[in-house]
Image 1 (cartoon, rainbow, N blue to C red):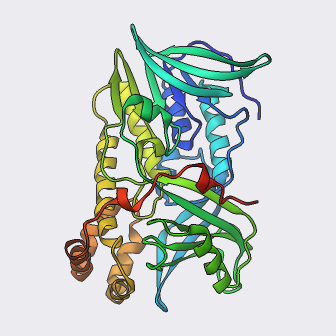
Image 2 (tube, helix red, strand yellow):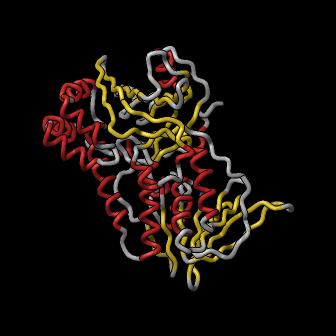
Length: 406
């Protein structure tokens, strides 16, 4: 894919070619804003990673991301201490290939008028008369050089350990490692069914096996509390007689409370989107849909000024996920057994109708249909040790990514 890297000085500079950053660039460019995307890599060649998202992504992207869809999931099998609960989905989850998604979004952003500049390393931001000076490092034929881009607005889309966020004065976020590996699907697993295992002695989150085709899938886990992620995953693979075919690793931010996504710097504005903003559902650590919602909200704020309805709605959604995580983070095996016992036909129907990107609807309707589930969660919050995602997470960087093995 060839990208035009020439163009006029932008009104908005997006630092980082993440999915959320490229979506923000597309939205702004399609509304007439001059947008430049500045990416450190010399080539747009993101690491492949299999992602699972809810149908809500289609409402946000329309047809933009369809070519990145590699499979659909219509059923979840949940496991805990030998028990199984099956949840069928009224609208399927989508399996996306991250590298394809980023390539598609980059192409659409360019067609809308955004300029993509590769080999630009973020160095800093300085306030100046009328806006901001974005300082970038770059390689050239004579070694390393530097350049300045003068803009009104900078959007940080540079991931969980965002340097833009640091330069803008946002507090650092705790992160956790995510590790998954490609495997051949077990013979008893249909390609439209995902499996989730709750093993609280290994992780307060879960293991997953997500089919990406009729033959292959990804099995992974989220680490926390300093647990040996790689060792646990390898033990889990061995127990299920699955052979790892290639690892995929990532560092994911932990949402612990809303931070404003805009900061004023002199006469200019700095915004954050995606992982840089911590827009991740802390129940599942899924950040694709919430990242796109944050990008939509930032685009609304830039185009129209003031507060964004989408950002207000996203804040409520992420706060509900944080409340649920406060309960789940302390669950033990016996708690999951009780949850499974409470998931009668009516409760399972609620989970079939509403996706994990509709936490408010799920909590409200489960409270009406199966109030014992909410009482169990409340008991967990009130009787367990003080909850702190910051303490249970850790700052993770390149050492975690060294778990990736092809």
